[in-house]
Image (cartoon, rainbow, N blue to C red; front, side, top):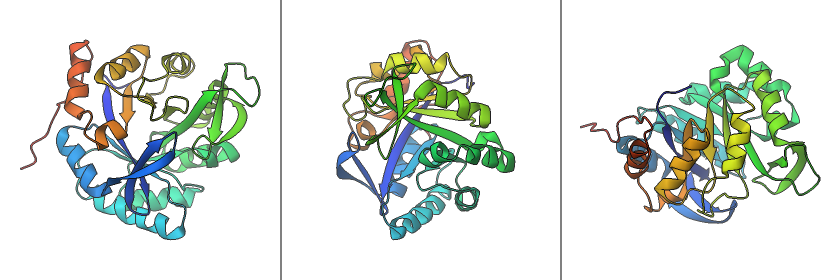
Length: 262
């Protein structure tokens, strides 16, 4: 586990542009991904996450260029998710400069993919992305279920059981996104964070619902090793520094709040 709470901006990229909406709908343009990544790196982001949500082959190809250009300009780990369905897809992104790879739908459809990637590249490369929500399609033991396709498709799979299984197969980190809270800015799903924290012992990234600095503190108290947000950073509602100041004031260790690259 990291001694310092990591603060991570997430950039949803479609056809080479950063977009953001509410519950993955009503998307609006949020800027150039490379420029935003560079700004976040300078502002003290501990990592940067790209999620490729492009619908076309052209969009996925543009994403590869974004990865390569960003990797050449930032000094923090870069995680890339979206469109990864094979070991070859992982290799291609790592060659372009990604440090970690986010897995979601493909891992659910074929859990052996987690094992294959871990065996070839090491488990530290795998960030399991879990889009969870309160179970609606059918009851689950934990009360949360896994969704796919941006939260639009219920799987009926228990979120805690799936996370445990994926970690056992080799996932080195968990990105836990509450689909009930995504984009609404009323706070992270603390009960979900606590439940997953008690289930697995790998680093846990909390996502979905951040609207003010105190929300990040609450997530850390619930057991998150890292906190991730998108629109509040993209549209200037909060800065990386403000979040780190709040975490530090609450007694959590954080890394330096800004960088002077010269």
